[in-house]
Image 1: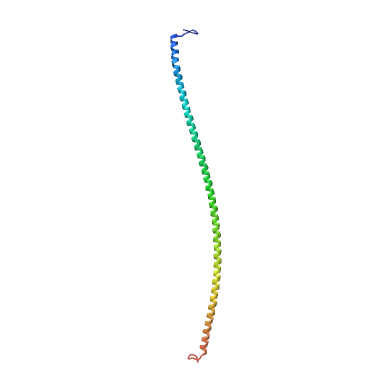
Image 2: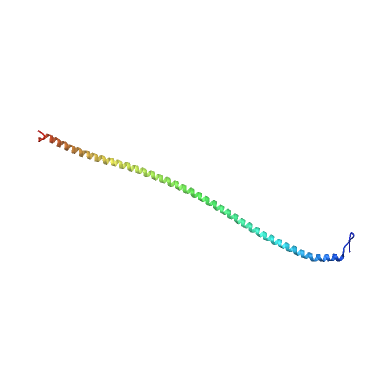
Length: 156
């Protein structure tokens, strides 16, 4: 069969090739469609997996941010509680020091008062003792004088 440009082709051979192409092309198309379907399926699975990964990452990020916020809140609360405890401790210390100073002043005043009372009591006792001793001494002198003035075996 003449083709043009001086080329001759065997008609029978050409028809056989066309028949083979008619059979092969639908199989290739089916095979290409299968590949395309598998490709679409793989892409859909990859897309779903990517969405799951992104969703998981977002949840993890939210959890970490939430944990970070909780940690920050806990630290702030701990710091606030520490400041309150220090303020309370200082207040209690000041109050205790004031009470101690007041008790010390009261103790000093009580001690001074007791010392003054003891001194007064001692003065009263010593004055009474002085009077008693003076009276006793007076009696002793009178007795001595009476013995010296009286005639007796030792006195001529």
